Length: 176
Image (cartoon, rainbow, N blue to C red):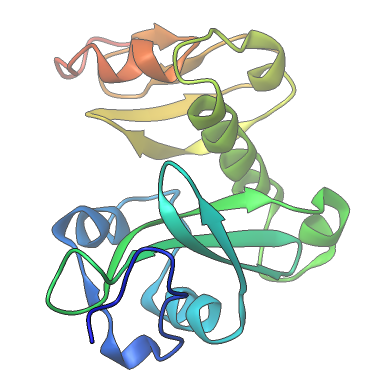
């Protein structure tokens, strides 16, 4: 019997294939999602329906929420569509050995950019210090505490929104 979008997804991570979209993101610095965290979220995570994405599993570990979007009705087998991290409890994340302050700030900036993709978010970027680049679009981004923007460590361009980042290609080194 065919599954419908309303049927809760299967909780066996071994049955899920990974989309190319998700595989590409596994390789990117600053994503913090791994096949292990995907498996854990599918097995033990809270299950929620989202009108735009479909089914989501969410699991909080060490102050960080891992969100995994799956689909199992439009393909021959269940697939992991995408996944991301969010700061669920900043203090718990900073107290955990698993994360350092740069990791927590990277997750917070990435989340803020995604939540308000077309809106400049200088006040959500300003308190963060991201000294190890993370990737959005073609850019390797960083920010210094106090700066109201992220900047690409390769081309030097400054951005205040995700739409600004993804609408402009990186043209290589030019200094900051």
